[in-house]
Length: 216
View: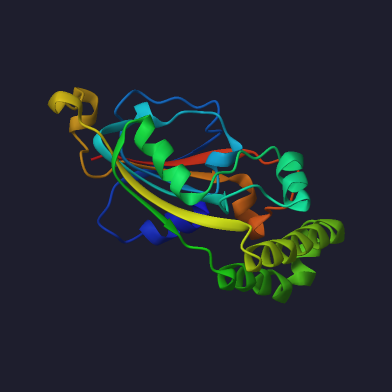
């Protein structure tokens, strides 16, 4: 992923550096980033990134959610086995407000088409995938995606999109270390399973972050 980003940056008028790290262990100074983007990761981790955002900084999050009400026995067993802490979309949005975010947008973006699209892409490269990993890994991943298609079609497993802005308490001043690159600091939080064909069905998920820093 980083090599692709570096290739795309060649020839462009931009000066950036990329950093890959375990976001459960990595720390940054308070008020470092303008934007934090997380794809399907928050449910895996306990780390707080709120303090990394500058005042009025924004988050864009997609994450697994569930429907309102108690889950089925099968889905409950899946949640417990994975160690997830799932909430319905509205409750997730309220948690962002309770955490100190403002202008919260919480939308149910459950569409089975994107799961099918990702699964089709991996099935198309089946031989290469098995060569790089194993047939067991392939079967686990594709089987997991098929289960997600069933759960989402039944309305149990949902995907939420969340956008929010960190409150600027009493016009809090941006720290001096962050003033030089006010519009160009960004951090991505992913599950390691998002890369390498989105290996989201492995039992061990290792969240990591990709930080993009302006070096102007």
